[in-house]
Length: 133
Image (cartoon, rainbow, N blue to C red):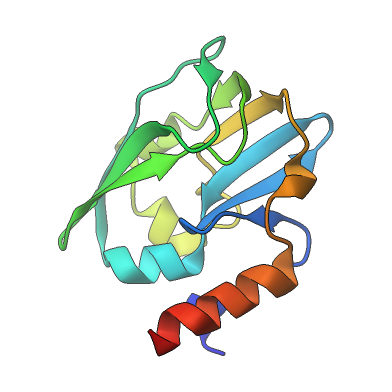
């Protein structure tokens, strides 16, 4: 498995290639290396929610633009936005450099259980099925 197929065991995943990491009562959200690889060089990150806004699982909270395409960002869980990574507006390349860490997008206080998302094994199988399709 190459870097684009890296799957970390400390978070949950969506079929749209977002990750969700439970951390101190909040859920940090971002996109996976597979999504970054599919996008290519990221040129713009637009997050349309602010702290205090409500997210709904599966609904768009922003977009990522690259030299190849524009892609919606979908909330992995429903809840209240606590923090937004405003640094991505000025430095969208953080997603290409470190999508697991500095490239996090939003932090949500969830109103549902993150365990309903795919675990690392299920997401690895999803990646493999995507590659074979």
